[in-house]
View 1 (cartoon, rainbow, N blue to C red):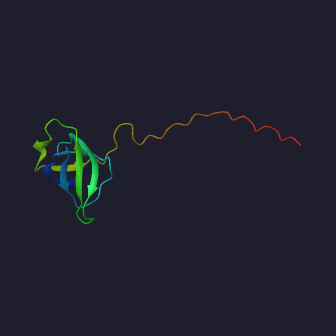
View 2: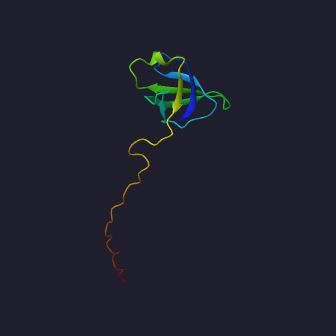
View 3: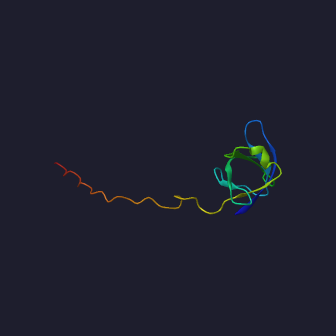
Length: 99
């Protein structure tokens, strides 16, 4: 769990806006201090030194999070990190060349 920043306001477009000291990846999972899922990072904008982060909330009352500190969940979600198991497919030999 890595500290993302404190929520400054809830924008009309439906995003929680906060300022951070680092740049997270898009679609990173965002949680509160109790590890409750809040939403995902949808946009990063502003100066590189202290970017603004737009989080698309997945909670009922996102305005309740104004002033709260949010974190990026560094643990992998269920199903992530598993590599696809390749099927062993028998390949047909190439056709013989004529001529």
